[in-house]
Amino acid sequence: MKVDSRISGRSALMGILSFVIVLLMMPLGHALMILMEHLLTRSQVNVAALCMAIAGLALTLGCTRLKSDTAGTVAGLTGGLLFWTGGVEFLYVYFAHKLSVAPLTDNGVVVTKPEYLLMPSSAAFLLLVWVIYIWELPSGCPFFTFLRKHLASGQAVTARKRSAAVVTFMELNVIMWSSYIVLLLCYDSTFGGDHSWLTLTVAGVCLGASVWMFRNLLRLRAWGYSLRYATATVIIFWTFVEVMGRLNIMEEIWVRPLEYALQMSVIAGIFIIMIIFAYINGRRHNRK
Image (cartoon, rainbow, N blue to C red):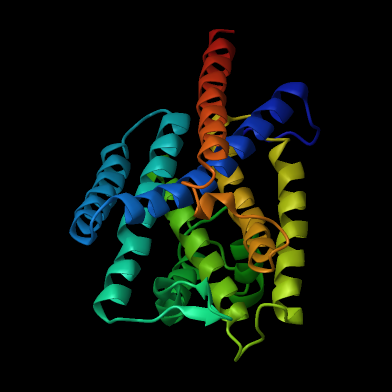
C-alpha cells in the first residue's frame, strides 16, 4: 500500500474526499431504510429488502476478480451497505414484527426500535467472527493486530491474495455489526444506560480513535486503501454521532427524512458531487 510518513496535498485531498463520501453514505443509508418503511407496504418492504441483500452480495462476488483495487473497493463498499441494510437490518425488522416485539419507550417516546432490541442477541456470533480475524485471517486493522499480538502471542498469519471487494464488504459489515452491539449493550440498563459513564466513555474513545485514524487517512496515497480506511474511520466516528443523537445533543435528521426533505436532498447532492469529483480527480492522476 502507498503510505507516506508525511501528509502531502494529494494524499490529504484523497483522504478528505474518501472520508466525506463514506460519511455521507451513513445518513443516506438510514434515510433509505426509513423511506422504505414509510412508503411501502410490509410485504413490499420484505421483497425490496431481499432484493437489496441479493444485489449487494451479487455485486460484491461479481467483482472479486477485478484487477483495479479502487473499483473492487467501491463495489465492496456499495455491496456491503446494500447487504447490511437489506439483509441484516430488515431481517431484524421482519422478525421483530413477526414476534410482535414492542419498542423501548421513555415517557411515551420510542428510544429503541424493536429490531434493535433483538440485535444484541447476536453478540456471541460476532465474537466468532472476531476469532477468525484475530487468529486466522490477515488483517490491516490496528485493533485486530493489537489483539493478535496480545492474545495470539503475535503469531504471524500467512498473507494470501485477497479480493478488495470481499475485504471491503466484510470490513463494513463486521465493523458496523460491532458498533451496533457495543452501543446497544451500553444503552441496556443492565450494563449502564444512555447516560452512564460506560456510554459516555465509549463515545469519547470512538471520537478520539476516529480523530487519530483521520490523521492516518490523510497520509494514504492509493484510492482503494483510502476508501477502505475511511470506511472504518467513519463507522467509528458515527458511533460517537449515534450517542450524541441518543442523548438529544444533536438532531438526527436522517431518521426523519420526510420532515427534512430539503436537508437530505442537499446531502444527497453533495454526495453525488463528491463521487464525480473523486472520479475525475482519479482519472486525471492516472493520466500523469
